[in-house]
Image 1: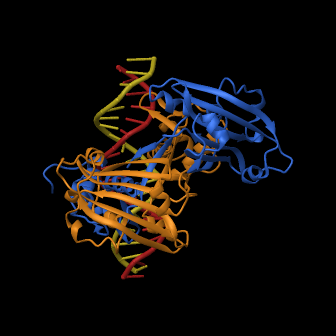
Image 2: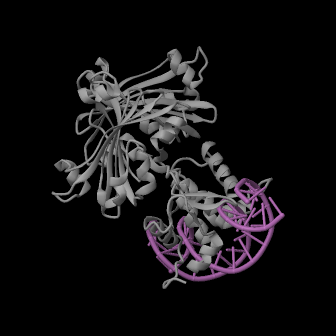
Image 3: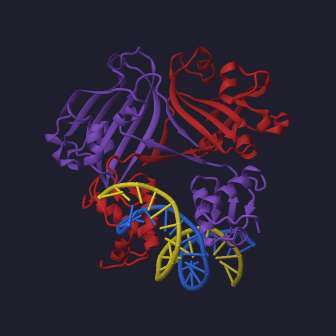
Length: 233
Length: 233
DNA sequence: CAGTGGTCTAGACCACCAG
DNA sequence: TGGTGGTCTAGACCACTGC
């Protein structure tokens, strides 16, 4: 029995982490089972379970029925990225936010977009291009296709007043999506919009969202040079 | 009472998601409290709690004591990124993995690294530069400083045989870290190493890890053109 | 202050799967 | 096939916080 009982799942988690960090339990080691730890810590098994499950979700522990719980040998650490609304992201930095619509019109998407969004060959979709500003400087160029089937009230929206980014999150729920991060060189057009040099390295986020098997939107966000996306482990 | 009882937390989660996706519960709406839902679903409150807590962690719900549970108005969706060992990432794509050490030596780090790693002005650290190959082509350039205080057996390691990336995860646990994603233009040196053109847009990951208040390592990973980091929502 | 979510408990049964 | 984690339950108390 330890001097002070460990009776909250947070305390259990801290104790387990401390044993890992002190290398009492090393990567690859099998640790005691839940029942034994519950006895040792003086708490219920469910409490130990909650703590160990949380650690497994972050990738620090590996758990398998019958095989037991091990300290992860190759900690595939999971970083959680928050994907905020662009306006919030800018305002969180205490910078004035600005927004300028470039184009918004319904048209037939090019074949690659049609394929990715699984649209019929004669279908039309809403294309919205806009520039988000931070501190009166170009911040992100947003280039987006929206499937009208997924957002029926789409035609009545004035994308001069609200960004597609913001309108969609509240008005077109999605069930799942994919997101990709990459780097591209500024094309002449992008360089002009973002007021930077042709060839500058730009950070890009591509996002596809779905509602069941209906594509909702496909968006490309191109950030001005110098942008960094940060998170912690 | 629904036709079939909902008695697993997964089923509760599915039912709640289905009500959100069908817009029976819209963004901003207050949903019934745990006790009421437990009665409605015919399960224990703890089961409802487990389901709603999981949804809150992904950002779909907003929960506050006394105020209740609401469908998130601005779903700050959390994407979890897996940060794998580079060799595993390459092998997962069924490509042959290669590794070439460029330099590994103990030296005094430049002032900016010293500052970021919180090292004494006369301290030395191990600098390791290496190239990871996928399919015999340059894949990632790794440029890293390692604090010898955090990895005592450091000098005996032959970084020709194992990458610093891989050795560290198993031999120098960390308590927390920061990670940043950005885009840079290829310098002449980077272009040479990655066999690409000067000025090409490259995806970069910067990572700092700590063990308590001791810096463990600071790494820069520069990916060859075309690299995309993907995840799902 | 009172209602909500947050958590702990003790016990139970079950699903999975390594040996 | 037995040991392990995964989960559910019913009940209880607590912490926070909007009203």
